[in-house]
Amino acid sequence: MRIARPIELSAVSLLATGTIAAAQTTSLQARPPEDARPGPNLLPDLPDTEMTQAPISWEAGLAVVPHYIARGLIYSAATSAQPYGSVTVAMRELSTGDIADPHLTLGGWASMQAAEPGMDQRNSGSMKGWYEQDLYASIGATILRDWSIAANYYSYLSPARSFDGYSEAQIAVRFDDRRFWANVKLREFTLSPSLLVAREVGRPARPDATYIEPAIAPSFTLGGEDRTLRLAFPIALGLSDNFFDGTDGGKHTFGFARAGILLSGVPFPQQLDWLTLDAGVDQWMPNRAVDHGLRDKETVFHIGLRAH
Image (cartoon, rainbow, N blue to C red; front, side, top):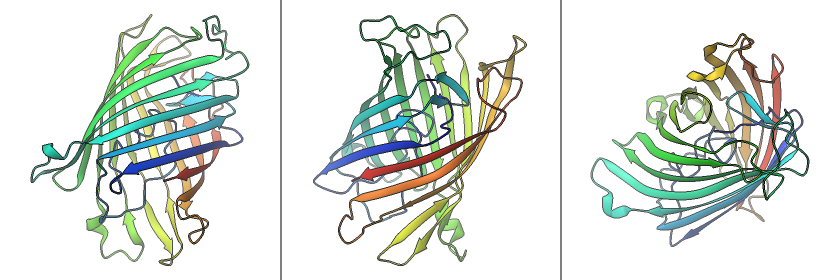
C-alpha cells in the first residue's frame, strides 16, 4: 500500500454519504480500515444499536493533505488531493442467528498532486500528477454479536507511473466491548480494540510483506441529548516482516507507534443535523532505525467534515 508523510499542518476531508431505504449500520467496513483507503478514519462512529443497515448505501469524500503518509512511511512530499468513493450493498439473505449485517463494498481511492511527488520518484505516465489509484472490494459482517470482521482486496496502481502496481489482501477485525463497561460513569465508553492483518501480492523488487496493526481507541460521549460530542484516544502499532526497511539495509519488525486525541460532533444539530465535524491530532513515533522519511516524532493535525 502506498502511504503519505504525517500531516504537519492539517488535513481537510469533505465526505458525502447517501442511503437508500434505511439508515446504515457502520460496521467495520462501511468505510475501509483506518490505515487503508480512504485515508485516516478520524473517529469511530457514535454507538447506535438501533440503526439497521440500508440495502444500498454510498459514500464519497475528498481530503487535501500537505504530504502523503501512511503506515509510518512517507510516499509523496507534495501537497495532494485525495478523492474516494464507495458503494455498499447489504446481503441480508446471508444473515443467520450468529451473522448480522453482511455486506459487499466496492470502492476507489486516489492521490493526486500538481507538483512532482518528490523523493526521486517518476511522474512520467499519461496522467502526470495522478500518483495513485486504488480499487478495492470488501466483504464484511458482524459475528457473534460483538465481532466485526471484513475481508478486503486492494489493487494499487499509479497512472503517473510513480511506482509499479501491486495488490494486497486484508483481514480486519474489531471487537465491540461497550457492554463490558456498562457500569463506567463515562457515557458509552469503549476501548474498541481492532486488528488489521494485510499481505502484499506481487510487490515489485522485493518479497511480499505481511503487515499487522493492533489498535485500541478508548472513547466516550460528552454533552446532552440534543448536542453530543465523541472524544477518543486512538493508539496503534505498526509491525511487519518485510515492510519496514532499515537504514542499515536490513528489515525491522517494529515500524511505528501512533497515539492521538480525536473529537467528533454535529456542530449545528438543529439546522444541519447531517453534518459532522471531526478534529484531532496524532503523534507518530517511528522506529529510528527504519528508513521512514519522517522526523523522530511527527505531529499530525486533522480536521474534517462528513455529510450523511
